[in-house]
Amino acid sequence: MGLGKVDLHLHLDGSLNLTSAYRLARERGVIEKSMSFEDFQARMVVPENNPSLEECLKCFDFPLAILQDQEALTESIACLIQDLHRQGLIYAEIRFAPQLHCTKGLTQQEVVEAVLRGRKAALSVCPGIMVNLILCMMTVGPEVVNHEANQKTIEVAKKFLGQGVVAVDLAGNEGACPILDYRPLFEYAQKLGVPYTIHAGEAGPASNVRDAIEMGAWRIGHGGHCTQDPEVKQLVIERKIPLEICITSNLQCHVQPSYQEHAILELFHSGAKVTINTDNMTLSRVSLDSEIQHALEEMGFKEEDIRIMTQNAIQAAFLSEEEKQKLLAQI
Ligand SMILES: [Zn+2]
Image (cartoon, rainbow, N blue to C red; front, side, top):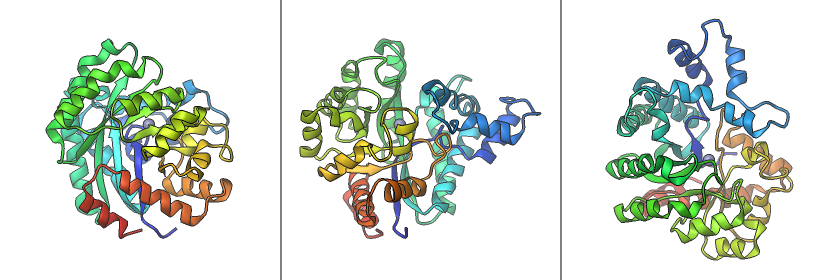
């Protein structure tokens, strides 16, 4: 399709350029020099047939091992932006969790500085695409375990807000800890004026979507499970809460049954502000083009529907009104 494309939900670690990642992994001793590119690739993408959640999560092992120094972070974001530019995207919000890149001594601020450098370098050679960053806090278990690291993420986001960073997020194992336990962190983000989206209702129940909205999220990562509770679904529709839906990723993680029965259909046709996103381009073996193709060929969406969802994405972006108008003119 000729229209400009927008991705609001895209994880850096799950979307690495394979050629670059292979070289970075070899240089850093993450893999044996004898490992072939094909074997490396097989460990970076989910298996074709009905992968288990464990198999999906294992695909983050190499990316996280690679992305522990500034050079690797700078190169990886730059390669990803160039890939998105080649695919015809006009806007993307790329997210990552700075605290996951600190195991070899980097601070969260140094992680973000490295990613911002790569972003700047890539944008200077990729006219026509805008890219901003979302910094993820993590659910890794009881809320107290990484409370300080999450708080630091908000502070780093505040420091670079408006300089390429636009928001924070809560990602990780939805359900490892009640979402409401993070309320103090979101209140802190509000106090500092840092906008946020929250992963909710992906693997977890509809009530997580309601809790996220009550904590001030005006945009939700995934949120597909809101259809399991008519009241929550109604809340999403009435409040015009944009949902960052990642269709194929949801099937691979067994949180939606099939393309034909994916909740995005019910939500779109009920008037919810849904958007189509990739989640993890490399890990899930998808691109925005392939997701749109699934939507058109297997889910009964029309080209006009795709345009509406792209408009939704632009309206939902962490951008100024002026920037949104500029993007809307391109679709
Ligand atoms: Zn996600």
